[in-house]
Length: 78
Image (tube, rainbow, N blue to C red; front, side, top):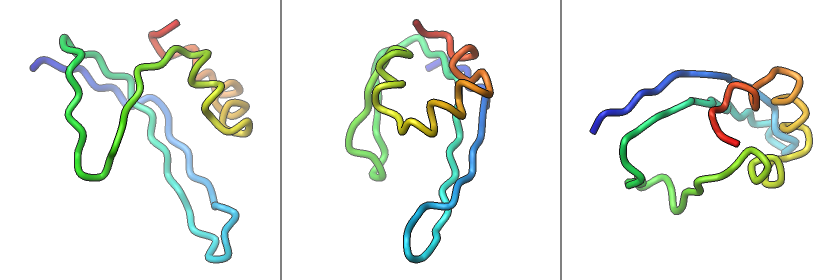
């Protein structure tokens, strides 16, 4: 399988929990010649989404951050 992966954006945040745990988000732009997806044991589902669908599914603060940092502009989807 031929696949292209390019790191695009990273974010670190402290989650509002009692333990104040952190979370790291890494955004990659990937291209492949196949629609087939193989999930690891760490995942249960996936979704091919448009930018509009992503914005509906994401936390408002994440949408604001991605918008301010032009992440949506980098994504090669409609």
